[in-house]
Image (cartoon, rainbow, N blue to C red; front, top):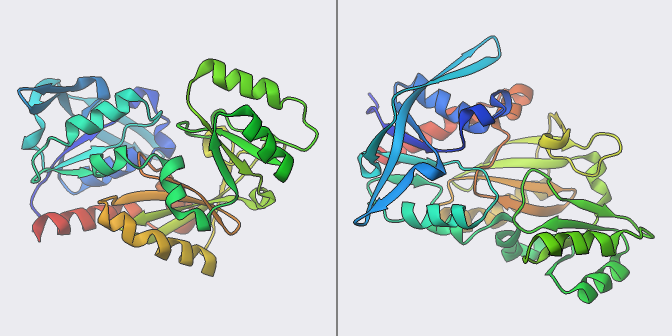
Length: 317
């Protein structure tokens, strides 16, 4: 019989989430089904005192009936996180100083508490930068805040995508077509709001056929969903209307997964989502990858069961 685990979820408030499509909800619900203790705390609840990691934390209970998902919080209290077997770092981006601070604090937990994903490696692997370790798998890409360099890249490739370097969910992504006169305005807007460089990529027309999200568990692909942009939209993210559709992995997809697999395992990046458009890897999501509920709906693959099978085995061997 598997031991009852104490699991703490560092995540945003449930009342702010779309529970129907939320991956963290599915992971927590499966843990609850296995009779594990599940608790909730927010980034602001994390505390470091005398080098001990604490949180204002509460147990919570989840309900899923006829596709109606709901929850109940328990009473919040101050606890040492070292008393927990697993801490699930499922705080959504932006990958800002608050997020980075959380990784520093969680890194101080003793080894007997498993943090998923490894906070040290998460801090050093923001999705739009970590992916550049595998530039041979990517479309032509530029990271810069030099306007002349960006214009030169646009002159070379004509049709480009502009992304904020630390954004998520498709927010702030622009498709700048040949002849579009808005490039200067877009760059001015970005650099007025933030001092960070931008990611510029050659536009991939294959995005019209979908942006494939593949979930990897300990470096191995376990499921995928294709996200097709809605009409008049270049972004495929489900947050902005992308339609999830059943898919399968191509030989190229398998090759990409195999190429990055060892690096993910070495870094303790247990639960990862990658994005592939056509033949190209565009992002490696290690912060709070999503998509498992859509995969379950369209392919009957229950990744949350695979995940906890892996974690339970890892903690008992």
